[in-house]
Image 1 (cartoon, rainbow, N blue to C red):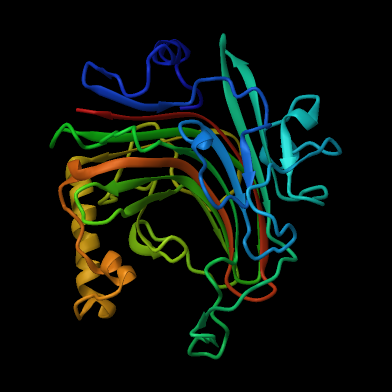
Image 2: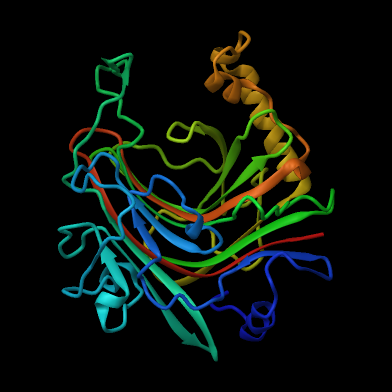
Length: 374
């Protein structure tokens, strides 16, 4: 599928997100014009302020770069080169209205773009990003101030040795969307258009991008959430293993579990919808449609797998006493209806596993649909 049905877009764009229609709850459809990049990007974002909720925001970060020690910056408008050279999405003139970068970024440096396109009579936003993680500092992981090494003597990297560019749509707390709230017939759907024309790595590094969302548990004694990540593109190098078809892991940066899946046949936690592109490790130019669904039973299976991983974790073998261990080791509700949709986003990262490693990736997206059927 190379394009979205324009008449269907027109119909859906007239609906308010969250309104139930004939067995469908729409949570987010990427419809309002974005205008330009101003006000729609934050570099080194640390806190989501109230004005950043319920709309798409580029969040670009690299906590180890130290090139710009200030946080929550709007970036630098630039016009010397077109970001579309790397993202596959040409930026219109005047360039400075639609693209911003890290301070001092030269041609091919880290930058993002946002502009509108008239497509089939419908004005819709388009977003692009270039992540450049070459020539950046690399931090080693420490425990109680002591550097940590692998069994072969190589240093273990800190989990912040990344360059990330995420297009976020976070729902404010007064928006209580339950993807599986309609019971066992509920099925969550997330689709988007994506292209990744630029990717290269050096040393032990990987570039990857794909849609993800968070599920916030609303029945527990303290707030916590699960990442549900779906890789569409994964580009490893330097002996890094390929991304698994599916997995249960943990995001050390947010201290939250990750239910990982992919656009591949036979996945347990999600289904690749008919007509969708499949996960790949080869860059490509031109829009591809990626679409997945998560049924009520698949969500339940994922939650049960997560609890099994907790039971097998040695750090959870004894009763948890610290807040961090309580969050980590307390079993999760296996009722999918207990979870609120907190965030949907396109997760793009260049992660570096060893000193001297680096990489770059350019990608662009549009046409998000996030909804549940029942």
